[in-house]
Every structure is written in C-alpha cells, then in structure tokens.
Length: 401
Ligand SMILES: Cc1cc2nc3c(=O)[nH]c(=O)nc-3n(C[C@H](O)[C@H](O)[C@H](O)COP(=O)(O)OP(=O)(O)OC[C@H]3O[C@@H](n4cnc5c(N)ncnc54)[C@H](O)[C@@H]3O)c2cc1C
Image 1 (cartoon, protein in one colour):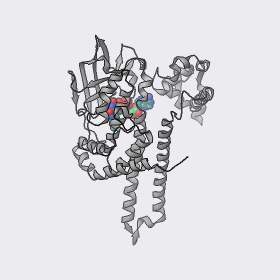
Image 2 (spheres, protein in one colour; image 1 turned 180 degrees about the vertical axis):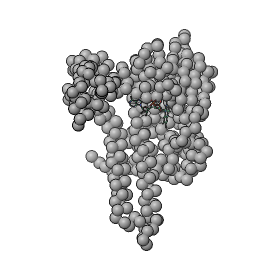
Image 3 (cartoon, rainbow, N blue to C red; image 1 turned 120 degrees about the vertical axis):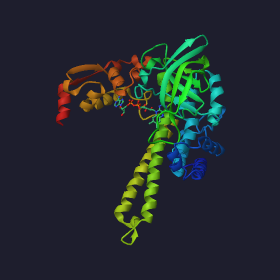
Image 4 (cartoon, helix red, strand yellow; image 1 turned 30 degrees about the vertical axis):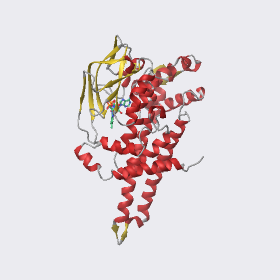
C-alpha cells in the first residue's frame, strides 16, 4: 500500500490548485448575486485539462480514475473556496455523463458525450419532483411511446443548472409500471418544444448557479434518447456513484477551508501578548480538526480506490450471504425501535408482525422493489425466504435499555 500520490496525481493536483487560486476571492460576489460566470470557469478548467476526468478517452474524456477525480475536486474547491469550481468536473464526469454512458445505443453516447465532456454543453440530472424527492421510485413524470418517439410529461424541481443547461437526463415512469421497476431515464434537449425551464426558488446556500425547474408538456423525443426504459433501476442508480463520492469530497474541501481559516486567524490574533496559536488548548483544537479532515480524506480515497477495483463496502455480488443476512437481521433486531420504524411499524403497537427479509429490506432502503433480493438469481437463493419478527418484548426491552 503506497500512501504517496504518483507524479501524475501530483501534477493534476497542482493544475487544480493553479485554476482554483485564479478564481479565489470571487465567491462572495457570486453568492451575493447568485450568479457565477460558470462558462468562463468551465473554459479555464478545460484549458487545464480538468474536465471529463474519468470518462473514457473514446468519448473525449481523460480516461482517469476516481482517485484523480477526488484529488482534483478537493483542491479546486479548497483553493477557490467555492463549490462552483467543483461543478466543472462534476458536470463533465458525474451523474449526467455517467447516465449517458449507460445508454443502450452507442449512437446516443457518441452524440452527447463528447460535447458534454468537453464542457460545450451542460447536462443536468432531473429526478426530483414537487411531490417526490427521496421517494424517487414514486415519481409521476411519464414517458409514453408514440411511433419512433416518446412523449414526456412531468414537472421536475431543484435541478442544478436549470435553466442554463442544454440537456436534461430526466427520470420518468415507463409503461405505467409502478415502483422502481417502471423508472427509466430519457434525455431531453432544452430546445425541445414543450420543455419549459424556470429559475425556480432562490436558495439560501449553494448559490451562484440556479437550481431551477423543468416542466415538460408533451415533449416529443426520439427513442434513441431513452437511456434505459423500465426494468433497469438498479443499473441507473450506479450512475450516481460519482456523485456520492463528489459529495464526500465537497464536504472534505469545505472542512479544509474552515481549517485554513482557523489557522490563519489563530496565527494572526493576539491575546496576552502572543498569537493565540501558541496556546496549547488552541492548537489542540486545530490538531483535532486536522485529524478529522485526514480521516475523512482517507475514507474518501479508499472509497475511490475500491470503486476502481469494482468493490464496495457492502458488495452484493461478493458478500458472504449468510453472514450478511445474519448481521443485517441482528442490526435490525438490535435496534428494535429504529428497526420497527424502519419497517413502518409503530413501536407502541408493534405486536408480533412477521415480515420477510425482502420486505424489510424494501422498507429500510426506502426503495421498494430495488432490493438485491429482487434479482432473479438472488430471489432463487433459499436464504431470502428468511423472516424477521419484531415483537412487543424486543421493542419494550430496547425502550427499557
Ligand atoms: C444542493 C442540492 C442540489 C440538488 N440538485 C438536484 C438536481 O440537480 N437534480 C435533482 O433531481 N434533484 C436535485 N436536488 C434535490 C434532491 O435530490 C432532493 O432534495 C432530495 O432527493 C430530497 O427530496 P426532498 O427535498 O423533496 O425532501 P423529502 O424527500 O420530502 O424529505 C423531507 C425530509 O424527510 C426526510 N425523509 C424522507 N424520507 C425519509 C425516510 N424514508 N426515512 C427518514 N427520513 C426521511 C428527509 O431526510 C428530509 O429531512 C438537489 C438538492 C440539493 C440540496
């Protein structure tokens, strides 16, 4: 295990620092005006070779790995002190292009990926609706086939980059199928008749770029714009892996900014005749901050590195099924009250309801129909027939504890 960055990773980090420093000091204005010169920012990132970091070279990307991405985004946000700098790599590497990489037709990938990865066009992800956020699997937007096209109707909100972006990866319900199984993804261009983009509500935070609304009224899109139709929900969710990593890097960079500010202040501020950093209790606090940041960085980098190796902390493909199931049931049973809540049972009237492991997973994951037990090969395994009993006794014992 080598904890040192390679020469190429150090070069990426240094280029990111250079671009970040170029935009430093701008964010207060962008925040006040709620508008950043995003396209100029993207151009500077393009010139520094920091777009499309993990997208394969055949589609115009850099063909790098998730660790490259983590190193670059942390450095960009920390030095510029703005989330906007992280948006360039995110929009050209994150869920938008990742989703398009999952497209069933090669021509869809060839058409859209190069201009997105190059930063020529912006691609937003449009999942959230006025009535459905976390419960994405209940979404109401519809995609209905009509000859060689699909007709899309629906309302999306909180869409980062709307109304500026040119392309929207819209999550919609296909074939009227309820739940996760009916959710697919389709690409809608800004110029499509019936596509209305609004700036939406003004936000308190994450400012400088709108998080607007996308209203689709009888929008006709060709069938090659369908990334995936019904029945591919789990695959589509893998398109968010880079976003999950991004959110961790983003928090890491914000923590780094707070640390840098704290160090600068304590080095300057004097009390009783000397800089307060010289007091042991003050630098102990700084060391605690430093350590917390380092821990988060190590966890983030490990997630990036293991993702590259095709692993995850809880890989449904590789795990020991028996051990996993036992641990998982133990976790639920051990947390009776939380467990009862997770499976939708009011603790005060827990009774003695038996639920299948599969049902429990659906409830606990908040994503009915998407549990690993739903895949045909897993459904065939005998252990998925296991049951979990939540009784008044176990709940009462937990409350007493
Ligand atoms: C900075 C930012 C950028 C965003 N960009 C985009 C974007 O580009 N595209 C897009 O589609 N969406 C975007 N979103 C929207 C985001 O995906 C939703 O806000 C999110 O899915 C939550 O949905 P909601 O806001 O409707 O809250 P709800 O789902 O209504 O949740 C409300 C509250 O209930 C809690 N809650 C909900 N379900 C459960 C549960 N099962 N168990 C326990 N608690 C629960 C939540 O934690 C929350 O506190 C963005 C949001 C933010 C903050």
